Amino acid sequence: MAIDHFAINAVDRSAEQQGKGASRRLRKQNLVPAIIYGGGEEPTTISIKINELVKSLEFEAFFSQILTITTDKGDEHQVVIKALQRHPAKGFPMHADFQRIVKGQKINMNIPIHFSGREEAPGTKAGGILSTLVSDIQIVCLPSQLPEYLEIDVSGMEIGDLFRLSDIKLPEGVIIFDLDTEDAHDRTIVNMQPPTVEEVDEVVEVDEVDASDVPATEQSTDNNEDDE
Image (cartoon, rainbow, N blue to C red; front, side, top):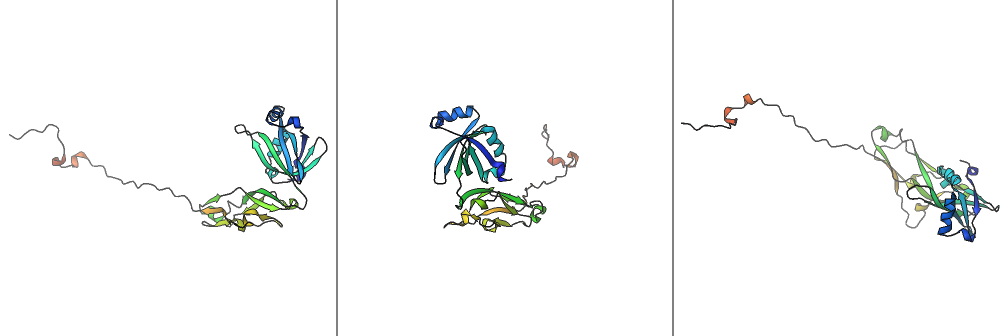
């Protein structure tokens, strides 16, 4: 999705429009309180129309792409979303945090992972189960190199195969955070497990026996008489 699809209009919040009470009043007006921080500038508090924000949240790329926020004062901010607070029961957005990006300065972002070729994989055709262990990973790159997602082709996986972080083919300039630290951990992100076999208790068939075939000494009688 093109970046211009993520142009958001916002209203600057004054000091009187900040705090818990003010935030509740904004939500009653169908506005979502938010903050823009970073980039060597003072934080900027804003509010966004809830329907506009909800519409943008429908797209996965909204969480991993550069966004443009324009305020009613004409200020324009290039940002990425860093946190989103939702209502615990209803799920609608209650507060958003945005971080300014600086040209030439690398950023840390969580990027979704897409798995392709699941049905074509030999392991799948043999009854195996593809187990995906992560849905996104943290990367480091320049804003201009930020990918929308990372794709992993699993079409060649056999039963018993696995795929690690270090196996991901990365775009130019992109590194994986977990592999670039002193205590780097090259963890598994997907594997092809053997089919699940359910144990079935063995049923032993017993031939039915007719009562007439049972010797008289083995038959029980309720009214036995003593010999005279």
